[in-house]
Image 1 (cartoon, rainbow, N blue to C red):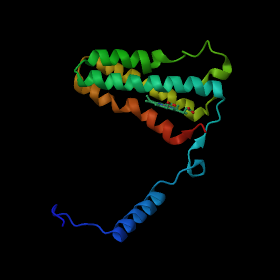
Image 2: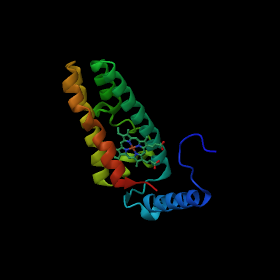
Image 3: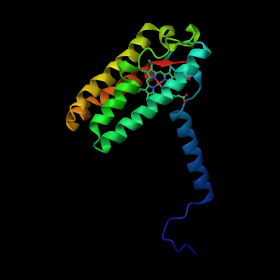
Image 4: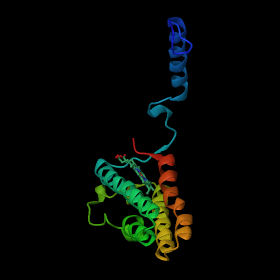
Length: 157
Ligand code: HEC
């Protein structure tokens, strides 16, 4: 006897539900490179390795900045932003062999998005340097705009 009060789902009904869910998934999640409409940026493997390491550092930096902002440490957040993401962080790969430098091998518009990201981080850093939390918060979303624009526009494989 069913004591839970819930309507029991029979085997046939259950199977129909699973089939419906599976069909919905196939429609909702088309995968495979053929469906990826982003432009391919054909970078050589050494440049991709540099890029991946930089990207993980970018993500760590964003996390640190957001955490510091949440803790009210506005000026420190600005310092991290300038050092790790701002224009101060540009040119770090200059001493690497050319094939390991991602920037110069990117399509021009992609490279420009990267530079815009550095500039947005520096704008945030300048607002944060004032110690004014509201002004800093207002400049924070733009720090992530370039992450989004580049990732939505380009793929590397
Ligand atoms: C100019 C383009 C560009 C910008 C701007 C950019 N990314 Fe990326 N990102 C890439 C590309 C291209 C890859 C894929 C690299 C590869 O092929 O492995 C990537 C990969 C990543 C990855 C995955 C790394 C891994 O583990 O393989 C993370 C995380 C990431 N980006 C975070 C960020 C964050 C956070 C920002 C902004 C602060 C950002 N990216 C801005 C182009 C960009």
